[in-house]
Image (cartoon, rainbow, N blue to C red; front, side, top):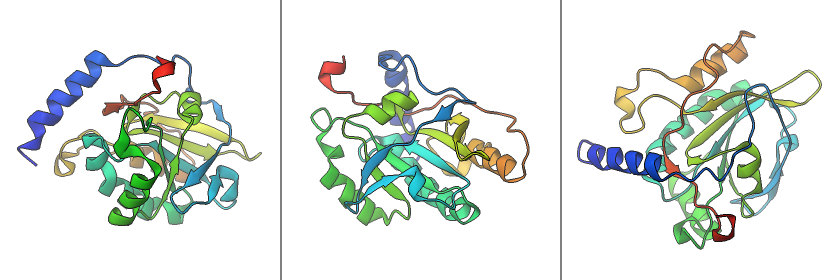
Length: 208
């Protein structure tokens, strides 16, 4: 892990300097998120409304290839295992263009999900429309949605899962868990947004 930290720092700096703001409009905290229907790695189409007993969702834009996304996979698995039984399952979405990033093809997603034994849905945003709608720019980029009394999905938190993308042993602030704990306790989320750190989403060439 120690050897990978300088590389991750360089990757993070490169991502910050070269990020193209292709998504100017996206969800803000407090907005109502519209449902979507995407293909899961099991070949089945999935939407938010399919999980009727959910209190909300941890929607995470991620991928197979980004070093940051890979470092967060185990933490996402742990997050799902802890909060899915409480009503907040993780839903991972891969928005990367396969031409720009062949390692993020649907077949590779299936391989990755099998190898890592993902307990959560891993969906393919082939058209990138869902990522654009949310305003996602990086992998990983996390959105916590809370179901309201009338069944709408309200955005409660946007940003990073925690405050150390490189080393889980050095995490001192668990942003997503803190937000989820507040929602489960019917309390106001104190910190509703943080900066997502990761690789830029690989948009289709025509989008640029």
